Length: 308
Image (cartoon, rainbow, N blue to C red):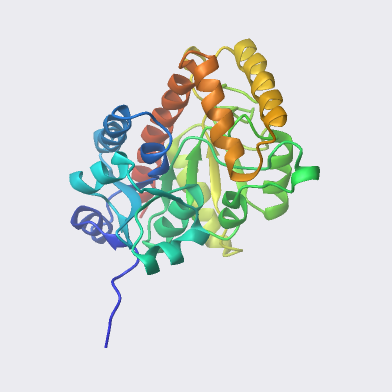
């Protein structure tokens, strides 16, 4: 009888950490495969793992290699994902075809959250979430991240949602879906490249132990298995200049409309436009946010593992 491998396959280090109740942080692989130019992407992938280790936690970068889902990549697998040749972008709905056809792909927020939760990981650190697109009334375009997080018990440390999206509509959608949102040291929802989107958050926490307490309360309540979003702003000193951001984003949206770009192509186009038009400053702000989230994610994982 054919027995399929466990999904996802855990690296030796991740398996051992879980067995010993040591802190583990899930990391997505899309930023490595599709979010950064080569060869910097591989260096960043290694750097993010090192930041997790520096806080005493174990990194579990998640990806699909040759039809096998992995939580925890070795050096060769990380290089393969960073190489980009034939590396697909996988949302959670793409996982079954990817596994069945032997594909190799980097996982988005939805696919990473799904596989991480399945592996028993509770904390996931990323950059910005997907959400409701501007002009939703015409396009009905909303990221699969939101619905998946509404039914996945995982804590996601993020710098809010990508600022190219409709932030108020996304927050409204998260409320409708019952996904908890707490601001980390902030009463304003972060704006991805910007420390603040201007939108308020209902709850603010200041320490990793407080986040772990909210996670424990989620479990004690036993309600629907939904995510907890920890909205962690990029430091103001490292954010993109807000005036530059607003001007360039307006130009990018106009260009997008003029070219008739729609669907999955919108986000990569807008993000690429911002990188070029800001002379790379948006990319640096993005990376500053991701680094902060990964470090905080490791601290939250530590506080969670330390609970009796």
